[in-house]
Length: 264
Image (tube, rainbow, N blue to C red):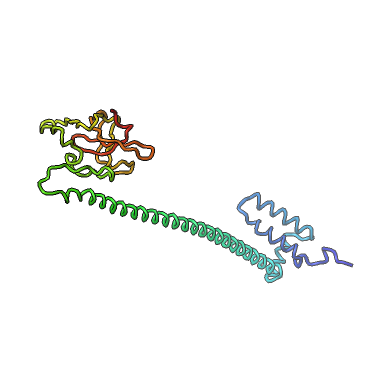
């Protein structure tokens, strides 16, 4: 026959000891309501085993090293172990997040390196094309200078302008001035007067800041900008692709301009 609760030692029961361990610390709560509730529950818990607070005090005094205290110590160790496990899990999660952030940063760094490599390659290509253009321009200048160098001494014949190469960097008077037409006086030149030659047409700049370029090309060097309405002398036209260019001059500069930007 199984002994009744009164015939067994309740303090050796783990359930009874665990319940006491939870209720006893609550008696010292700073909240009056919580302390009173813990006291009532403790009295009720002891009453189920026909014990009173006096019995509890005597048992705790007589058994300082009993299994009850050992059970409390074990539960404290369990709580510490659970806290350590939780801290370790938090550390593992943080390490995982740090690894993901590091991989994202590595991907961004690789992309930045690729962009930088493409930029350097594009700049290298631009420098190469600029060097080629410089060499070509130098060759064109040299080719245009050969007739002047080979001209006999004392000859007064004006050289033909090199329109095919688009190189009109020489003096305006030597390349575009009509040698037959009378030259403007010094006073007319000083006042900005423009003399139209026999083989030239009169025109005016149709737009403000009309770009006068070194050759008939949108990318060619700009020699000057003309104001709207400024008079020009049109020497010739040239069709390149779907654009028509005009070789024009003023009293101070000559070059190429789009046909639609010049009124005739």
